[in-house]
Image 1: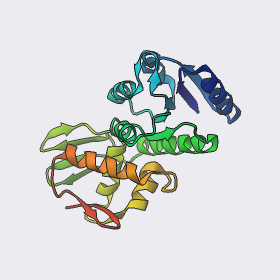
Image 2: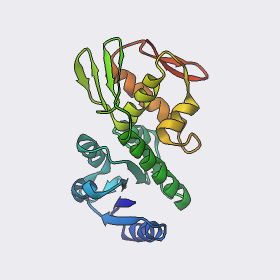
Image 3: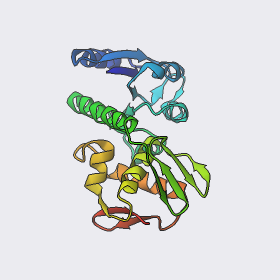
Length: 219
């Protein structure tokens, strides 16, 4: 796997490069956000620090999501809830707080890249619910004929629910299918993405919360 490591701390970067190489990955390291916006084109996954010398990593994440669906794992010392929520809303596929256990990091990388591969092999299908069209193949959504911009995770959640429109889908199943493993997924991440998805669709009642169980896309 080609891994782009965006990290300005030489010591941390060297340790991660050694671990990644030892586990069969091909890592490339850059220290600046501006370089990441170029180097991501050749990467299968991006490990993104937020404290960068040429700006905030959140801004790098925002710009990445405007041009690519490359899986991004935020790897940072910022563990406050506000930062976690913002990172997820900007489109991070995962968010890990330093110091991170290396085995967990490798597992999370496998999960996000596996989900990206599954997205790429999705069957050609358009699901219509009311005036909402969900094109699984093109990974696009329109509401009332107008395009709606969703993050990768938001679209994945909508696609899972659309495939079972009218049926309640459990939180565990959503986390299994979107994050790859409910055990490593963060329940709070699911709630953040669902809230954002509802707001972007602008159709109250389309996504119903089944208290104590999960969610349903109404038909």
